[in-house]
Every structure is written in C-alpha cells, then in structure tokens.
Length: 176
Image (cartoon, rainbow, N blue to C red; front, side):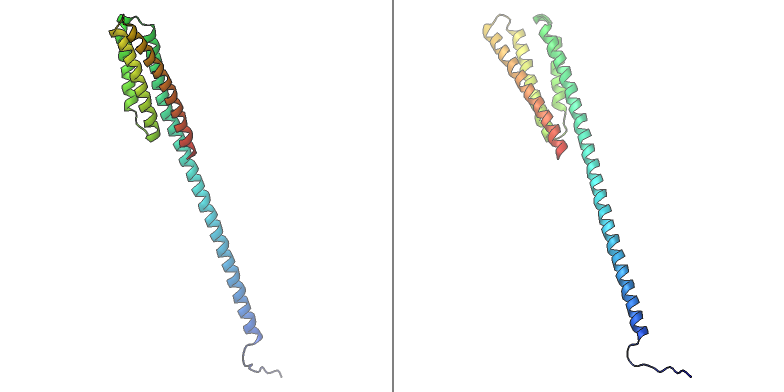
C-alpha cells in the first residue's frame, strides 16, 4: 500500500504554484505596460489632431480676415481710380468714398500683426486723401501740385508695403 508522507519544506506543488503565480504576474504586468503605451500613443495622436485642427482654424481665420482687408483695399482702389478720373470740381464724392474706406480699415481689429498692417494702410490712405484735398483746394499752385504728387507716390508705396506686411501676417500666423 502506498502511503503519502508529509514532506517538510517546499514541495514540487508549491514550486509549481509559485511559478504559475509569477508567470501570471509577469503576463499581467506586460499587458498593463502595453496598455499604458497604447494609451500614451492614443493621447499623443489626439493631441496632434487637436493641434492640427487648431492650426487649420487659425489659418482659416487668418485667411478670412485677410480677405476682409483685401475687400476693403479693392474698394479703396476703386475709389482711388474714380478720384483719378474725376474733374477737380466733382471730387467731393470720390474723396468721401475714400474717407469711408479709410475709416473702415481703421476700425478693423484682429490681432497685433493685422492691426499694425491696417494702421499703416490707414496712414497711407490718409496721405492720398490729403493729396486729393490739396489738389481741390489749390488748383493753380505749382507747389501744391508737387506736394500732391509726392503724397500720392508715398501713399502708393506705403500701401504696397502694408499689403506685404499683411501677407507676412498670414504666413507667420499660419506657421505658429
């Protein structure tokens, strides 16, 4: 007859049980670490998507605001062309249109870069308006004619520079 003797210390069953527990703990820990890595990757991907969405929204806003300013500049160009083709006596209406556009540009606020650009545009427009006012007020004054030409040339140069600044605002704002 077989009899089982009690063994003192650790038996094979104890060792196998401990080994199974260690393996289960190891597998569980590896699964936990893998899930942690997956969660971190998912979090980073979500963050990248949110940043891309923010950037796309910022670019859209910049372009919308640039389009508004360009629309105002088209109105300005139309009023300036009309004033250039209008006789001295009838310049009141084109000058009034130019002043309205200048006020519209002056009231436009978006961000620091745009504000700097629109402020430069407003100054340039003011110079052109002043030139036309000089032209109306002093019809036969040679000095006033020269001043008018200088102011118009300076205005055109400043407007071109302000338009370049506006483009830079969009380019740098989109890359931020």
